[in-house]
Image (cartoon, rainbow over all chains, first blue to last red; front, top):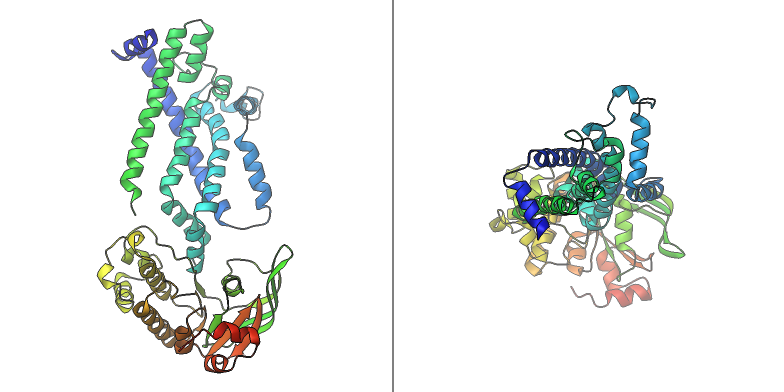
Amino acid sequence: MESFRQAFELLFPPDKELLQIIGVTLKMSFFSTLISCLIGLPLGSLIGSQSFRGKSFIKKLIHTLMGLPPVVAGLVVYSLFTHYGPLGRLNMLFTVRVMVVAQVMLITPVVIGLTSSFIESASKPVIETARGLGFSGLKTARLCIGEGRSSLFSVVLNAFGRSIAEVGAVSIVGGNIQWKTRVMTTAIMLETNKGKFSFAIALGIILLLIAFIVNALASFTVRENADG
Amino acid sequence: MVEIKSLKKCYGDRTVLDIPELVFENGTVTALAGANGSGKTTLLRILAGIIKKTEGSVKTPASVLYLPQQCYAFRGNLIKNITLSGADEKEASVLLRKLGLDNLASKKAKSLSGGELQRLALCRILSKKCELLLLDEPTSACDARGAQLVTEAINDYKEKYGCTVIMSTHSPALAVNSAQRLIVLGSGRIEADGAPSDILSSPESQWAKSFTSGWKI
């Protein structure tokens, strides 16, 4: 109950730092989900709808990357963007932008894998009908996305959920810097390490609330468009 | 012209289609008959490029259209389902009228019955021009009136574009009223090949006889 009271106190009136942390969390999750989906949805649709040499290997590779440990992704991105790394001159380490890069590396394989699995199984009749009508691969992929948009929306939500809940990669590349790169998860980790359990739990409750609101809004949108 | 040479389709050790040679002349209508699993759909799907052959060669024209057995309704109303193929709304309305669906034009396609959906899928296919039209049991879900409309629509399309038509069917009426040639398949092999009336009156093999004996015209 103490945690709930503290969460309430943090929100009403809103704590300035908390609002900044929520803002950074949403910004990072939104852009990483957006970029991952822009790459992953078309690629997953093409892989799922086309037959080509090496498809089996690509699918195995994607499935392996779907289980990529966040700290490994964080380490790879850190190595790339560190001062002496190949992309060090971009000066992006410990910024929200590099946190987005790490998140994209983690989430894109998930989006590709889930999308291609969905297209392969649920979209078989769509693909056969489209091919029967002589549609191009691109038009077939577009149709599959349009027809299965409710299912694909859950892929997007899954990506967003993974992004907002991720802690390992963002703490390595973001550095958990106050007023700059601190997000909900890294803040929870920090407060727990400091022994401020009530505050950490309060942050956890707020994080859950955000996830719930986003899911509810998304479900509502999908239901509105569900009937063909 | 459609030319098939030494065509084989295998799934593991099982050969589901084995056709040494088969030619479909331009502008002809051929009906494929045979029991379930005889290879009709496999042959059509290979010709349509949906699945790959295991062995042999298949030569088809550049533009091929294929109507699958399991018809699919895209989101939106019937008109939208047809215009998706490139036809304009006027052409779509004409086709819907021809297949007896004009009163359902603004209805959601996903709410159609099986027979209505099959006729809609045919409208969608017939809205495009092609050199080879492949139809997999185009009247399987239709009632007598629906089947008659489908038969007329196929005949009109063939008349208009002069394309080659190959269709699988269990309907003797469709085979006799539309096709000049009937090929009976059994276990992936050609059991009988000739004019529908000849095969139905005097089947070339015992198997074809047993299969077509139930067909009454």
